[in-house]
Image (cartoon, rainbow, N blue to C red; front, side, top):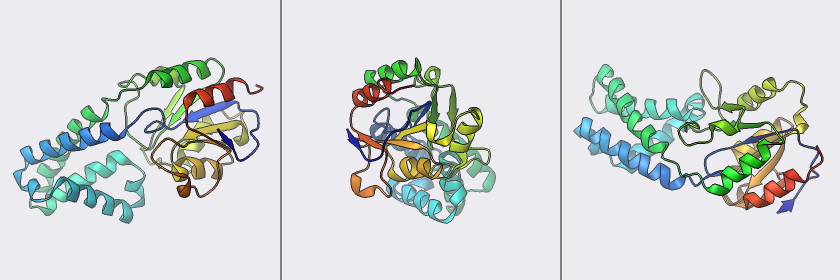
Length: 241
């Protein structure tokens, strides 16, 4: 565990989900493959673009539409709908097909294996702190067995943009208006979405450095960096409250 800034007493903790509390990479690979298979079954013409080419189109759409880039559900639906229309499918069929494909994606996307140590971490911390999930992803916390640990689950949608935009952090603050920004600790693996996003709000941050990113991706230093949930649990349970 590395300390970069002095931690002030923490009164509430928010957690990123994907690749912070569980390994989301194999989940997404399976979900992407299943969705592509369903897409090509419904619309054989869709196979004229490889799975990688469909992913590239989604990435390009992210670069041109900031609102879609901050909402993974809308982004995936728009990618499917616009891609099918470009391939000659009429708009109504494209919209209906996109919904069907997305339903398959979400089925596999929620087949998450949450490790026992993440349950232990949330169970232990939840006895002393309010816990909130703040995630850019669209995982169903009820389906993966995490919902009961959190007082609130905040995700993009209904005009609320994803991290590093302030929208979801602000929603958490509104739920606990008596807390100052510096009394929050946000935990996540993304140097931009989690560390930069939370610190722009004046929050403290704990960077999970065993996620998808390395230290070269850090734009600002977190308050603390850790690689094992037991370290974070020990730190927070020994903090004065």
